[in-house]
Image (cartoon, rainbow, N blue to C red; front, top):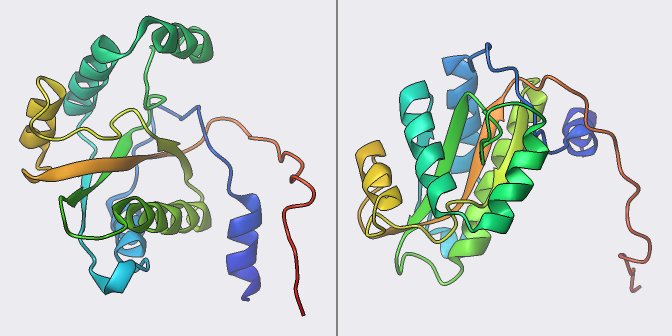
Length: 189
C-alpha cells in the first residue's frame, strides 16, 4: 500500500471541533465528493446521492430542525459536548455532505454508503481537512415532516433515504490516537 494512503488511514480521526471562520475550498470539496463516487458498491450499482451543503443559512436551518426532533437526553449530550459553542449535531462544520440512496437501489445500501463516506474521510484527511461521521439524519427521507422538507429543498431526491453524513471543515483541535482494540485480527494460513 502506498505510504501516503497509509498515512491518511493512520492519521484520520473524528473531528468534533471545526474552525467556523474557514470555509472548505470548492476544489477540495469536489475532490472529496469524487472520492465518494469512486467507492465500491454492491454489484457496482452506485445508487448513492451526495448532497453537499456549504450555505451557512441552510446548515443552520437543518441544524435547528434536527435539534428540535432530538430526544432530550441526546440534546443534553450535544449541549455538554458543545463546550460553550452553539449546539450543533454537525459540530458547526462549514460543510455537510449528506449521503443518501434511492430506495431499492441496492441490496446493501448501508454498506454502499459507508464505503462512500470512508473514501470521503480519507480524501479529506489527505487534503488536511477534518471530518466526522454524522448519524443525526440517519433514516430521514424527504417524506419526514420539517427535516424532510429541508432535505427536499437541499436537493436530496424524493425516494432517497439518508444513511450518513460527513461533517467537513478545518479542524481547530487535535484528536488524539486511541489504542487499537486487541484480539481483532486472525490470520488463517
